[in-house]
Length: 122
Image 1 (cartoon, one colour):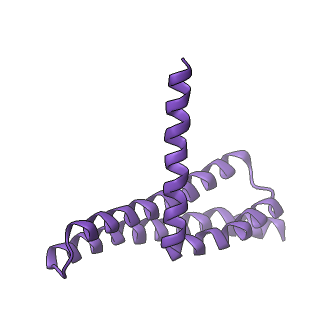
Image 2 (cartoon, rainbow, N blue to C red):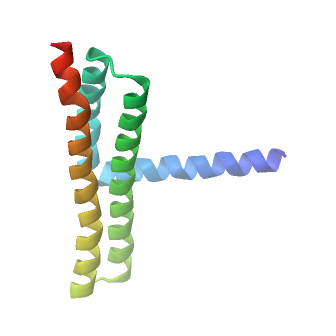
Image 3 (cartoon, helix red, strand yellow):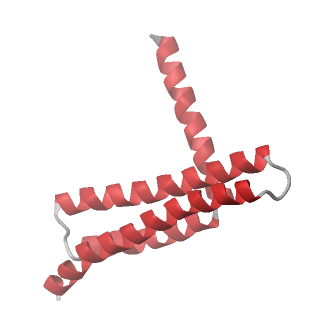
């Protein structure tokens, strides 16, 4: 049983290290985290319902996760290919498109949550 918990702690440690590496290397993650206090603050101000907080949490976690996945794909591709390659560019552009799509979807979802709530609060 002790070995089981040691493995879980080790996996969490690797995940935290990976998160820290992504945070250091991916500047757009800093933008997300810089905007996070504002989003939370507005949510508190307009007194979002528990359901809307849950949706907001999912939006934020999906956005950060896709950005980290994009970063890992780019790092993997850069490791495999040392020179400019059209196929590598295609892979990186497609991975980046996933980030763009989730970002745009997140913005739309946040607007759908916050605009009516702000109108009601005013």
